[in-house]
Structures are given as C-alpha cells and as structure tokens.
Length: 602
Image (cartoon, rainbow, N blue to C red; front, side, top):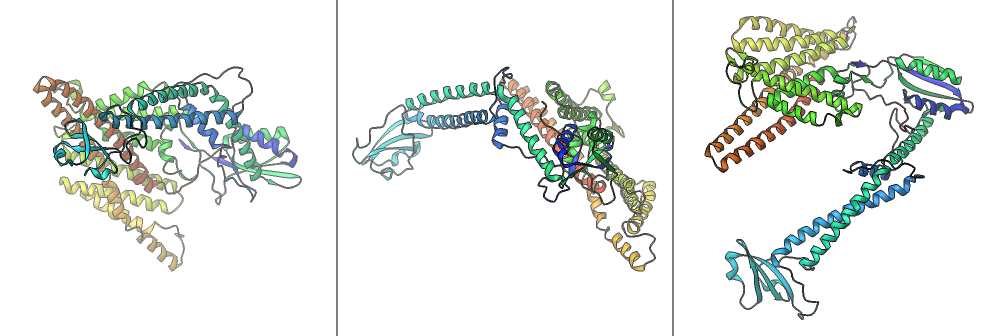
C-alpha cells in the first residue's frame, strides 16, 4: 500500500537496432517513456490515439449487443475496413428505423381519435381542404354556423372537429396537423419497420462474431501508433539512439537482462530532486478498488503518499453512516451477490467488487449498531437489541446531541490524521512542526468545544492550551524558508508566512463541521424509512385495496430511500475524503504511470 519506487532508465544502442529495441521494450511493458527528442509528438506516457474512431464506434456497438455470437472459426481473411463499414451501416439503419418507429407510434396515437380515413386527392375539393381541430367540449357552441364542419368524435375533454375550408381561420380554434397518410397506412408502415428492425437486430447479432478479430486488429493498429510515438520520443543520430523511461525498481533487472541479450547499454539513475517521476500505486486487490476513488480526483505526487487504504476505510465508514440501516445494507449485499460472477471476470471488476464488499459490510455493521432494519427497531432484550449501541441509556441514533458529537469527533480525527500524515511526509523539515501544530489546534478545538457543551472542565483545560500551543507552532513553522538563518529579513518573512495561515483557522473549523453531514444524511434516511412504514401501516389498517397499496408503499418507498442513500453515500462519502481530507494531507499532485506496453495479445 504505497507508491512504487521508480528508477530512471536510459537505453543506448546502434541506430540499426532502434526498431527492434522498441518492439522488445513494448513486449516487456514496464517502461513509462520520457521524450528525449524535441520533435516527439507524444506526451510522456500518453497512450496512442486509436487509428480509427469509426472502428472503435463499431466495436462499442457490437459489445453492447444483448445477444453475442462466438467467433467464427476459419472465417477466412479479416478486412477491418469492410467489417467496420458493414457494422456501422447496420448501426445507422437500426437507429434510423428506431427513430421512424417512434415517430410512427406518435403519429398513430395522434390520428386514432379521428378514425381511419383517406384524404381526398389534391384539388378534389377545389380551393378547399380538410382542417382538423381539438375543441374543448364546453366551447363547442362557439363553432361558427356558417362554416362547413362536423364533430367526428367526443371524449370527456375535447370534441374532434373536421372542417372543409380554404384556410384554418374559418374555425376560431387552433388547428391540429395530422399525418397525411391514413391510419391503416401508418400501421402497415409500422409493421414493416418493426420487421426491418428485427432483421437489423439479428444482422447485428450475426456481426458480433467479429468482435474479437476487430478488437485484435484495433490493438495491433494502436501498437503500431505507440511504436511510432516511442520512436519519435527517442534521441537518434546516424549511429546511435537513446530511449529513456521510468521503470519500477523491481523491474530494472528485467530491463537489464533484455539489454544484455541484445548488446545494448543501460544506465540506471535514482530520481533526482529536480525530477518529477510518474506515480504508480500498488495495493492489495482487497483495497485497491479505492485507488479509483483517489485518482479520479487527484493523482498523488511521486514523493507524496498513497491514501488508498485510508480512503477505503473512511469511505466505507461514511457510506455506512449515511445509509444507516442494516437491512438496506443486506439488500445492497444481495444485489452484489447477483452480480458477483460478472464482477469476478477481470482484475478491475474484482477490485470494484471488493470495494463494494467493504461498503456493504460497514453499512450492515453500522446499521446493527444503530438498531435500524428498514426503519424498524429490534424487539427489546433481543440479540439485535443487545448489539445496539446505547448512550446514557438511550439508543445512539435517538440522541441527536450524541450523534452530532460523534460526527464532529470523526471529522476531527480524520483531519488530525491528515495533518499527522502530512507531518510524516515533511519529516526532516521544520514544516513538520507546523502540521503537528494544526493537529493540536484541531484536537484542542474539539476538546474545548466538547468541554463547553458538556460542562466537562477537564476537556476545556486540556483543549485551550492545545489550541494555543498549536497556533504558536503554526505561526513559527509554516514556512519553507531557512529556519537557522540569521537574516532578520528571512525570519520576518517566516513570521509573515505563518501569519498567512491565520485564515485557515476558519477553514479548519468549517471542515470539521462539514462532517455533520454524516449525522444529517443518516437522520434523513432513517426518518424517510419511518415515514414510509407509517404510511404503509395506515394503508394496511384500512383493509381491502389498502393492503396492496401498503405493499406498493413499502417496496417503492424503501427502494427510493435505498437509491437516495446510495447516491448520498457515494457523493458525500467521497467528498469528505477528496475535499476535506486531501486538502490537509495531499497537496502534491502528480501524473499517472502509463507503461509502454503491447495491447495485442497475439
């Protein structure tokens, strides 16, 4: 659970072996290339753009097909361009037909109240034509008596009026535009479109047998583009080439062996202070799912720290507190079990599955501690009741002051941990005392506030000196300027740097209070569950159809509440980590390690 140590490797060899070396390094797949040539078009580690966006679009279309065919053995030579064109033609036809089907259905629905009729040919009525109007039933007496019109149908709201006139102004109501085709013609065309859509669907299913060859051809093409980018990134003269990249320290032996086999020269350098290596995170699969929660917001700098484990644990805790119901956690767990097989196919999906296991586990555990099961409390003196957490003889969740204090305590602990980690990362610098000062300010402020709220003088007696001592450390040790300088100007500027940290006092206060959202969202989820239970109970007591309605209220209400809890748990659980926690512990942003590797598997 750390950032992988990297070394800077430079490969030298005869210019005649450049292409062969690039192919071999791509097979090895452990180098993040660094451009040595000023003409290199590829940014460090950036993946090559696919050769054909059309091919990628065709592959996405086939991958999304609900019915898949296995690859056809012995299908003969594969023409990527022809297959791409054929698949995209099917896609275009299916989309066009689907749009036409939807349009026909709308037109049929609009025409059905008027009946099945054919309009007279152009000129059959002279200068007149048919006009159609929707007239409110209560206003039919406003229809002009000197006009030619007929009410062909009535419903509870409108009268359907057909008029023969030269212009729609003959009737003082807004006319309705209907499709010129008859109802039977529209229905015949709809049936034909449905048949064509069915044919297009099965044509698409048949084309899915080309998914693997299409993907392989795309990967090969991307590999060629990546090789060209690597060649452009290398330094070359008439006789010699050089190719540089970052590699994990554990992979240096493999690169050295590769160079020895080909008679290439290799230099290995540790990162210099001026270097900015990429960041490669390495975590066990059971917690690695949280890497995505980190990197979607920020990639830690190479010399920073890997927050994956902390984010995994805190995100799961925050999620469980927001959902705040053991039965909801079991429902989410059941959903996870239904998709377990699908989530076990690839390494990335297994990582997500393990993250989901953590979220579900913390949700169930916190729900048991809160004593909430679909908003219901366990029976007194039962096993579930004994597992429930009580504060001063009352269930924890019923004591709002206690829940607010717990939420704020979690926030203070989380941000204190952030500053302690930041202090560890700055060890060897005087800034370590500044971060320790912030930790003292946050802990002392919490204790001071807790003492003021509860009347516990001991908390206040400890908290006040901690805040003062921490503030002094922040003032004196929040500067990167030399500590032991005898220059009055330098020391004055160090104090100015410390004074610039004063606004962060309100920031620390606000960030700690931000964790009250854990209490507020958990309370909202619990109250919604109770409300749905009350509504269902009232409906059930009414009997008859009320029993069925009660079931609908329970299923729909708790389903909505689970979805709200899921969204709130993800959004706010990640926000507390990515905004509040990272702002105090992770200020050094880097860029990800992207290996120069071969995509095509054969």
